Length: 536
Image (tube, rainbow, N blue to C red; front, side):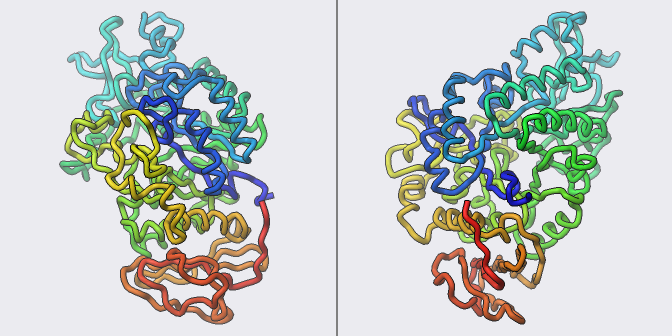
């Protein structure tokens, strides 16, 4: 049943492990830190933890350059630490989702070292090697996502290898059956250890055009944009054959029962939905990033919600994301007041919500001085504002030094207001955004209308967005004011006796008759039909 599928009714919480909790004073978060904070996550109410990469890695791209898919980087701990984390998380009813990075490895992975040793290596075809052009230039014009050519010439064999990101991250050849089986073996290794699913990094890049044709120029490219936008990625991404690879990956997970496969897919909506797969044989949840890039206006949010709901394949389950480790934080984009509206939107729309660590305490944009920059993308293309460090700063736990994150020197600076914006202080404030997130998650957990119910758009006018969630006889109305002025709330028919369940300002009495007026930057959830609660 729909309400029994954990990844449909639950809330996913992303942890960037370097920045969650340090326990050995090296200034970098670790697995033991996550384990010690499990009770906080239970208190918050989330259902699953997605952990960004923790595998063995030289850390050229902070774990997205894997040197061993079946080992833990010592910075984060050991396999025993991981097993203990899984056991303790499961004991508390929390699921564990790992970040799987299948498009590329580190150039220090044993596979690549073998592959580059000679043209006759048995693993040569596990990566993408080609001769350069007669003039000595790369095999084609493809651009790395971090700037510069996507090809590097290896002096040992005289050929070029493809890397969609850093030269230290050579791309794997997913057309090779032996490579595929080795990668599926890595998935099984973690599934056998009790992992509940995977978020798959850059899944739409796994297959490249077999002929490696040049990409066409982008006529809309403008100065100041990332170099990758100079070309249309017609031949290095989103190839038709990728869907069969994903279906094979899905079959590996299906063998283990109720596991979830989530795909990172930065594509327009009409191409994104293809990643559900034919007959829903693809990823369970192709990440929907529309709200990250949308203009923060009621009309625009309404448009993208309706288009997404309409485009979903039959049986496809929606999902929503406000931010992640690659994008500016929601509070940095919309400000503290509207961050509360964003929280209510995320947790009341139909579909699985993913919450990024720190959004529940409204961490904004953290200023990173040039001498503190860690992100290789920022270093490769400085001055364009592409750096991801501001979204990866340490979590803020309490009033102590370094906000309780570390007793050492933090790998990235904390927010300037960390001593005032932290869990310890916000827990004490009954109207804080942290309490709002907790109350929203509790409300979602206790009402099937919010966790698995139907969605119906009711009204959008000016800065007001109003929709209804339904399950059986239960009907809950959500009204959001995206504006800076109070707005009258239009209620009609039997909705005139709607009862307040929750306000983003946390200052309306629960059970009171619905408000005739929404305050500036206020959202409310109202009960307008029979209330059928459940306990989980």
